[in-house]
Amino acid sequence: MLVLEPRAQPSRWMSWLSPVFAVLLTMACGFVLFLAVGKNPVASLSIFFLEPLRTLNGWAEVGVKVAPLLMIAVGLALCFRANVFNIGAEGQFVVGAIAAGAFILHMDNELNGGAWLIAAAMVAGAAGGMAWAAITAFLRDRYNANEILVSLMLVYVAELLLSYLVHGVLRDPDGFGFPQSKLFSQGWLLAPVIQGTRLHMGIVLALLAALGGWIYLMRSFSGFKLQVGGIAPLAARYAGFSSRGALWLAMLVSGGLAGLAGACEIMGPIGQLTPSISPGYGFAAIIVAFVGRLHPLGVIFSSFVMALLYIGGELSQSRLGMPSAITGIFQGILLFALLACDVLIHNRVRWRS
Image (cartoon, rainbow, N blue to C red; front, side, top):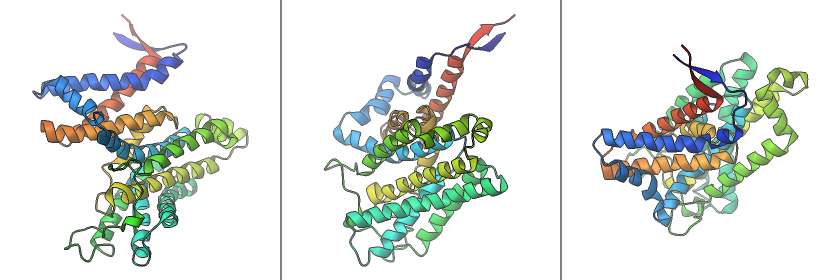
């Protein structure tokens, strides 16, 4: 029978190249999938992976998706390295959007935005995400509640809160009864990075977040303590590092970045509050973080791949007649491909009679 034997010394290079192999394996599985449903696999894969990159506007649309994915994934990478499993970034994203949107709608009657007010709305969004993440941190710290379950359940609370608000106090009185807020004034919207496209300044903030996360984790003593606490909690406790401090820091930073991503999303491509402001960025960013090897710079590559899957999925629906679930299918294949590659990198297959 076939058995897995741990390798004495797994290849470091192979570990770093594992995400690339996972992407190639995902494409191979996609080839088989399109063939199975009667589509031309070469043309279908071209539409899925190459068509979004043929034009400047296509690159810009990919960048629009990269911005929230990258921002959230940097915070999640920080959390997972601290051995804190924040699965509720989607809820923190939504609450951040609510906080920023409520601030904008309150101020929009008197002020028409501007750089300082946009910055204040971003701070409100980050604070909203941090407050939502703090609920999980408090319950874990005080009552030893499982942060996976708590953060996940809070996602549904956040989504219901958003639905309640856009059907109620934040609904546009001139919106013919549709559950959405009024459109924000032009002065509250993020400036485009490339004129004529939807790519906004959120992508710059996301790249700065990745750079800041790398500096913190790899070049600061506080980041070192955070990682030690995640890898060896007992050693960290013996060295006097605070596990409580790591928990709160990781959750608040992760929640703050997710909330900031939510604020940028409503001030960028959406321009208002709607019942669904996210196609699942918070959950997709979990895959992004692991494909990026939990490295703040590595997630730049993985967020680009995930954004490409979103855009490719939309093109597959419109041009190939594929169902909307195609994006989720490819995301799942990517995750399982990464896990398979990691297993084979750290273990060798042997035949044992």
